[in-house]
Length: 434
Image 1: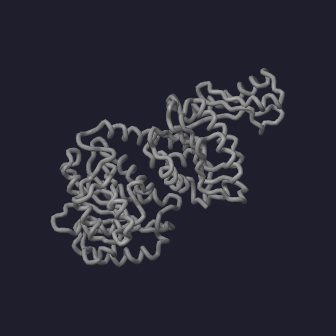
Image 2: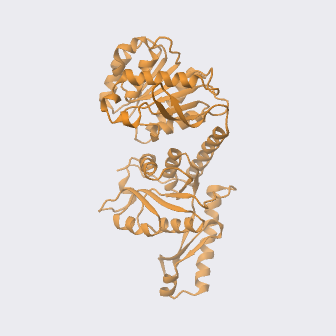
Image 3: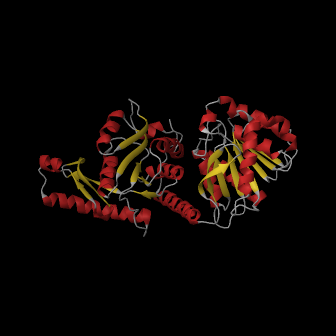
């Protein structure tokens, strides 16, 4: 089961990123429930988000049977075989289309306002919904997207019945569905929290996505020095990273990933987007090369990871758009131990450290030497990690705080849990870097 649409979106984003990538892509969310799921997918891929409003054209005497679909910009798709079998006249078809067109235009204006739809011509278009039941709306969306010039149509959903998912492969070039239970019943039965979204919430997601897209565009144009995808010099290896510098930034936060994580982690990318929105630069990078990750012991070699982090921090401080900026570390799992280990090194000037579900105990002998202000964030239901953090906190001599997120487990997938992490980290870094 999925906790909520945020959880479904994060998990779906990981699969889409793995299978599709982001080159020349755009994400379209079906309102209302598909938009919050699509938001997470768009943020992980780093591509634009838009809403897709479609209306199925139903046969007058059997409305559930669609003879076509319409979309914005006058797009119209008609199934001539259904028209022939239903013996529809042109007048009947026109009457249905005019009625549905009025509703489509009203809904599109409500969600998008005066903004024009994103041009889909020649692009990979990823259509996202919160689940599939009959598949009618998703099928119509895929047909409309193709009619608008998409070169590749991908349908991505968290859950749907296997027979319906299979049938949709006729309308999309690729269909990605995380769960296809045989006994399906209803979409909502596969979510713990399936509260309906309001139109205002849909508008909010779209505005937030547009704002983040604007920040990405500024960074791409950007200040001097590298931004976007970078290769970080870490001694004998070069490590891939994502470096984002907002306008008028007040500090920079280096993300130190833990075991099983990477710079593509949806959780860390979400937190980074919140920090960027607050005016903080972020660098997400992989501590290990793909070959090194196969050797499991490397993941728990905290001294190795901390040494890599120190070299990366040195590279970052020498970049023109980061020179002189106060620096913080955001660590998760074993990455938190590496962040604290590095923060205890003589001469390290990191100002603040935030640990999310971290293993500070793995930096044990170095903890008393940490000078950076340290925030330990742990889920209230992550009992084993909570005990380890409490023991580690007692060894810290710097300014520190242990913050418990009630009801959260180790990965903070519960409703609102990751939002709480992002807000706590933002406030901590702004307070110590700003």
